[in-house]
Length: 291
Image (tube, rainbow, N blue to C red):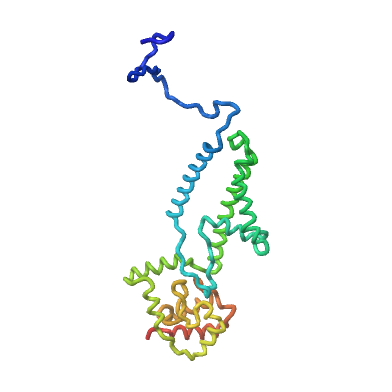
């Protein structure tokens, strides 16, 4: 059945209602907003819904990263461990480094923790209402594009600077991070068929040998109790060895080297103790054995 002036037009009947339908000659693509000069997309709900969907995708990607590379689990906080270097999770490194700057720390800490983050967060909230331009290409929005690129560059730069400074501190203090010490001790315990921490608990029950030795006074002069505790049993969880039974772990020569030059979390004592005091102290430490 033909209709109108086009005799070759295809007519489709749907039930009893005679609804004309043209045959498809190509893909049906709805026009976008660029087809309407001078018009723009409605912010609510169209644009806002798109932004929310992008935010969900970014959040899921962020969660995948944090699950794939979780923050290393350190030991419980120990106020006696003066060698501990605090570090936040990797995604807060840029803020951690930012708060080290001169005018956002110390007397200006409120500005760094509340003021500037508040301005940044408020700017993000007000951006859709302040930037009402119809241009969507970033290179034609110089102010917005420059601010965004500067923010991204700042985040990457501060993150790298914070990590490099942390590595420098580890190297300077000859410190092994706690989570690496934990992994090494767990691996050693597994190779020996022991439970992690079982060896440390056994060492804590070993009594001190010759508690009246004059070297005990040297431990007080060197303030060994600040890290190793008043009972000198240390904290194996934080990588601080116990003096009880330490002679089974290190030889006299190794102890001299450790006390003189430092090792891991332990600082060097060559500037605090004389060679004679170091020799006397390490001789006493070498005596500390199980039997």
